[in-house]
Length: 472
Image 1 (tube, rainbow, N blue to C red):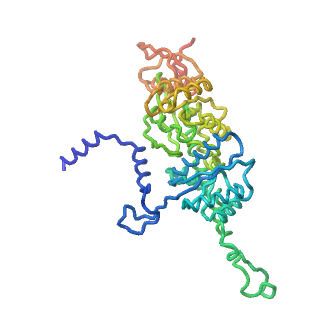
Image 2: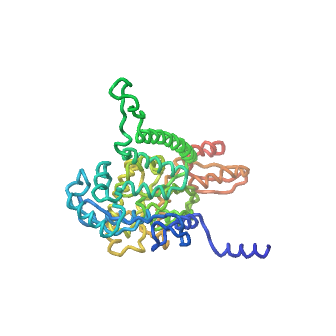
């Protein structure tokens, strides 16, 4: 037994595990093996669960911008579909002044889409936009397969990746708000409700049940939405309490924000060793992670990784995640991470700043960090340096430029406002430690009566140091 234990400990010393690696392994454990049928009947095969890998066709409507913009948007939709576990077979783009009010795309494109669905054997069509309930029903009746839109796809990814109690509640709230106006009943069969008395036109046995199944579902969903809002509000109160503690202690906070898959979690791991999940996928991490960091001068500050953004982020998600996104609005600095290897990083920055303005975080000082420079060509880097001269260029994967990022963050942290000199007795070493942790130490000397320290500190700490302060 002792020998086996020693062997295990030796193996543990050789392999480094963190929470992110374990979560990534768990997430990939349920991925379907390519080549297997979607409905497995033989339990002797590799998987016996009825997992379904949907085969999808993408459809986009190009209303503005260039053809490259439209192609980039459809490429991003393909990445979203693959993140959700689908297999993308083909993609169609139509040039229109505005989407068709009935079927999203024009009649000719609907015929072409139906032909592509039949020839490829696709079982789902994903539209690059948010469809109205009538558009959804009409297009499904035309192509004879399931149709979903970009919003439903993003909500599905969020539902797969949410881990914390708050994250799951926020995603469920967004899903219910989205699906409430899109509920479907059983048509006429459950909607006939004859009214009146027995002597009236209704007659005995012809009165309806009083409430259809569809109406019952809607009522239950509204009750669930109200309950989720109360739960999220209670969780937001806990989050506010934690933030107020940091504000009371004047601990500076830095929020890492940016487009999805720009490398925010990788950057957090580099700066703090947080060990959060890292995956080359859209919306890989949703739950906010906060870690403590120490500046070169000894000051303590926090770094928070927030949910990633995407163009046309569903407003249901913005509302549901508002309490989480307010973490950015309450920060002292926004570390805006941009994917330097992306075909259109300017559009990423625009989309992120649009959402930040929606939650009131546009007034927070911003530090732009262009990540993944190891994958970006020199021409792109030169263009981005001309476009954003104050940005810091780095690679969270290789570690290049991370010291520059850390120095830029520390340089932009707010400084304590009050400067004083105090002789602190040696038995109050806790005060000296707090000055080093949350203040800026300018000068120290050790005297017979105690430690003389000149520093910039917060108002609360200045009040505690007041009995030991020296007159100017």
